[in-house]
Image (cartoon, rainbow, N blue to C red; front, side, top):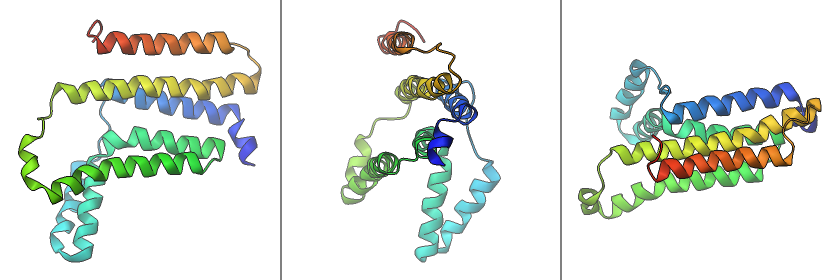
Length: 180
């Protein structure tokens, strides 16, 4: 059943569109946010104290950071759902969660290091744009599955590689400041 689902053209095209929407979000076309009233209600529960308060504090952090983490975790979940793999997405989520937790652990042990942190600004937008280019490159994989399912033969190896070269070429141009 998973094999039939992973080779289904409609299913793969849906995931292609989702990844393109995530990429557009990373490029700044729109912002994925939750309603502030919902986030504020969850955050108010964190003032209770104890384990329940700690849970709601972590949950509100996850909700607020959803616009940054949603596209990355979404990509891993798409891979798990479409290919039926478990190890790759699990390792990806473990790596992502460890990378997200390491700064909190370090600053909990060394709170004086908080003063030396860089301020948020333009560099964070650069990170989002780089991730947007990576999302586009990954989206082509699902479009390739659609092409294979319907035997269109539009995305053969040469076209696929040319599109990846174009995407990463544009990423390079962005990183050296030639395009904004």
